[in-house]
Image (cartoon, rainbow, N blue to C red):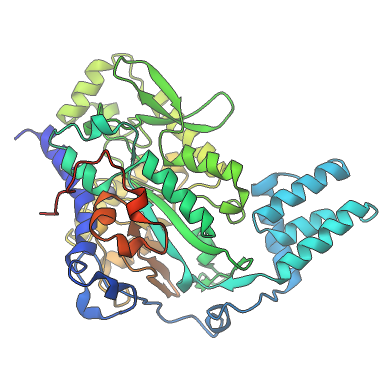
Amino acid sequence: MNKRRILAASSVLCLSAVLLGGCQHLMPFSEDLTTSGTASEETAASPTAGIAFKSRPRDSGEEVSENTQAKAEESEDLAQGDTEEESVSGAATGTAEEILQQAQRLAAMYDYDSAIALLQSQPDDPACAQAAAEIEGIRDSCVAWGPEQVTHVFYHTLIKDCALAFDGDEDTAGYNQVMTTIEEFEKITQSMYDRGFVMVSLEDMARKDENGNMVPGEILLPPGKQPFVLSQDDVSYYHYMEGDGMASRLVVDENGKVKAEYIQEDGSVLVGDYDMVPLIDSFVEQHLDFSYRGAKGIIALTGYDGVLGYRTDGVYQTRQELDEFQVAYLNNHLDFNWDEEVARATQTATAMKENGWAFASHTWGHINVGESSLERLRTDTEKWLTYVSPIVGGTDKIIFAFGADLAGAENYSGEKFDYLKSQGFDYYCNVDSSQYWVQLQPNYLRMGRRNLDGYRMYYHPELLADLFDAQAVFDPSRPTPVPEMS
Ligand SMILES: [Zn+2]
């Protein structure tokens, strides 16, 4: 079997394995999982089930876990708001009318203190004074959410053309299991919005204090809203996916917005909302209250086929150790220029970060960290840091491939964790089908993620019931039954 096929197979396998961890112990009585937390249900890919919020630092977790009214210290929030304000709306300048609009935008994204501070810069304007009073009222009604009350959902690359994705070739089964169609994604997003879900960042959940210790954050939302984290894995547009009905890369369009390119069968190129990033950007433009202070999702990147659809790995530059896919790609792109490719990838990643997106390592080679030796983990991480990190501007997050993990439910320790921590990783994510799985320690935050895909919708709709109605969402153009995991 040639390397090309192996790569394709392993890429699909990776996606499948993500699910397997959750599925193996889910089959018979899956509903137990959302409430029970017994360590005996662990698998390699899924360290535990149920709520596993460990060791809240100090005593600050108690009141935030009780949905108590927020009575935050104004001075603290103002200090934080000053930094948030820029990322959401830019500088506070303009007429009273403009300031009112900026403040309403900030308040819509739950940054009440920044909104109020902005309005107070116009003390003589009655409309601003009235708006400030109204926003204060909303702020005082807010409920605080601790990190253990945040769910996390993730996707792979979304399918635009089901006829091509489900054309019966060797990739069809894998796509059917672990991918989500754009139509499904749009229905899920609308449902989650209608149910009050709001995207938050991992930093909103916990961040380092001045001593370098991870401490819980406090997410303040009005009654009826609840926080979630969004991520997407393998946003590489791998070579093996070409022609299978999915986008080919992310680009910055003439308006400065990040869009997806989609190559049609006749070779013509569409630019639009053909994957998660532009779909979410457009949705938030229409629904500011879907994003907490500007937060969007986390994009987990490998490096071996490049990132975001750009062929930025070192092998494309050196032309050493290319696999067959990569050779074919370069033969079809004789004007390929590695420096330009890196520059465009960097431009795209930068635009995404400015718009609220974050990046994580998904390991360079999509390796299983549980099974890999320290040496392999080190070699792999060095490649990620060399070829991916400069493009995305570094990261402190790692979203493990294969849904693997460094440990079971017990706290992280040992040489692999020590190594990753020494390389700057503070946030770690695995795959787990529990509604909530969060472990906060002074030196890291670990979080389980729920796959929203064909397999989960088909076999375990009840595990998604808090988010959406799987029967209503499931795309009828999928071949059924969705294949079992083998
Ligand atoms: Zn993956």
